[in-house]
Image (cartoon, rainbow, N blue to C red; front, top):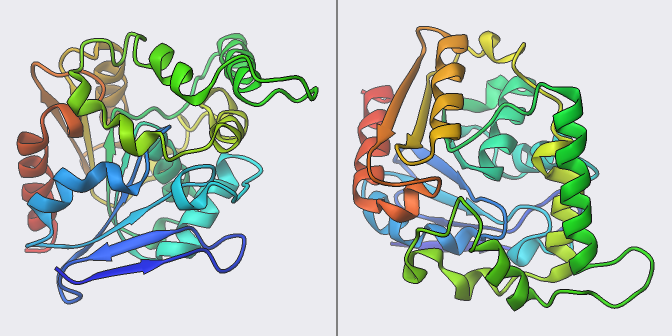
Length: 272
């Protein structure tokens, strides 16, 4: 497939890579925290014969590591300005970004696919607590007081992958090599500006989404599968939900074949 790389030209131009037939339906894939556009390589292999696919590196990640967004709203703005109108698929952090964009610029969406995503933490105390935890973790990678970091990037990933979302995943599915192309400073900035604790809760806004919405979650990820079903109920008849049994939070990377089939079927239904 023909490939086009586009490096950032201005502050809001995120790094992207596009493959596939320019006359096919266009799909933007938006990665999770610590990932890059490369993380989607297995999904691209399975979908690029049917769709034109653009992967993007979010601020603080990959080739967009030096791009700084003030908050999640600005992150979403940068994404929309970079990729324009499309079908959008966001995983985890990417899901929060595309959901934020959808509530502010729905005209950019042919459809919206949310994978292991959240509309934010509604409880004020829990949200502040999560933001504090994310900032503390960011300070271990990139201290704001000028002191030396207490974690190297490799040590950070050792700790990150022992967490409940990823501990069950075989190392080959974690794509550690591409994650290590990130920088401690970039990831720390992403935690501070776009962590789930920074997200303005969107529970009251998602009912206004009029585009087709598809929510996907893993059966082992009880928290996010519940959130996904609640979002679909709130959105209404234009939303559908799929539970992928036997996998957890990282659905696209734990079950790439099944995930690609679900996504392909949904998108082809929208363009039929």
